[in-house]
Length: 358
Image 1 (tube, helix red, strand yellow):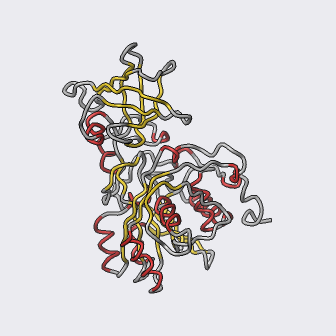
Image 2 (image 1 turned 180 degrees about the horizontal axis):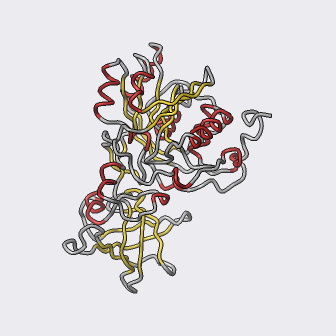
Image 3 (image 1 turned 90 degrees about the vertical axis):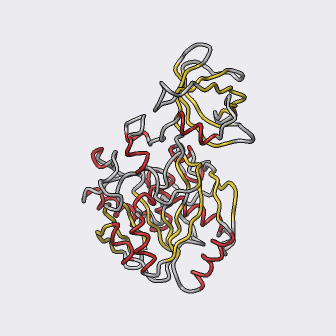
């Protein structure tokens, strides 16, 4: 029987073989130069296009929804002040007052009350070290800490940190090009530890062409957290504990989205992060404003309330993102699309090519 009918709760349903050389470790030469695999659900057809074709593939009256989160230089390094042992951390979010929240790794066990000393990754010779006191560690291994500075947290991260690239890019220190290319051109609200990668394809020119064709645009915010890197560790999706992320959709955006639907237009989500925000805001059947944490896990079978179409990159096997895409397009159709993408040498993951689901 079809995987669309049986096995949708089985994690192995969302596995596929990916040759190592198809993982995109560097950005494409041009931001809008990616290939685009177009899936038409009504016709069950698959077509090869490019990102620059996107405006012609949408309709007048459709509305793109972009995630305007900004990636912060969240990877920080230093040493344990007392012992000199190497230390590395990943900033997750700002707490109350001057509090930081981060995860870290070092040899041995860190203790509350201990201090770590940060070293600037980019300019250690001209940037004095920064002491950060560890206050307490929660059950998930996240530390609450207090830096010895009154400066804004994001100013400090830009001074000491670097862009936190996914492990499969196989470089710990971001290249100069990553500071520009691992960020959307419309990024505005700092807070993410990973880019909303479908948005990386858009240039101002591409967005302008969409507007000229009568395709509207709205922005939401979802700060991508560390959970996006964590694999599903259970065999059945129904047993998975979905991570939470902070997102926001304003009153005016909600009104624009409702009007688009009332006028017969389609809501075209740019990326899975926008999907998660929109579906959280549309849980009651009508899209309303939202601000707060969401732990929504979109998996088959799922009845979408807000979005109609999706632009997305190609995702890791057995990931919550691939599960979400399968909930929208069907597991068998997505498996076939991924098989074709591999056969035609599409580039995968954050710096890779894209898929449009209509």
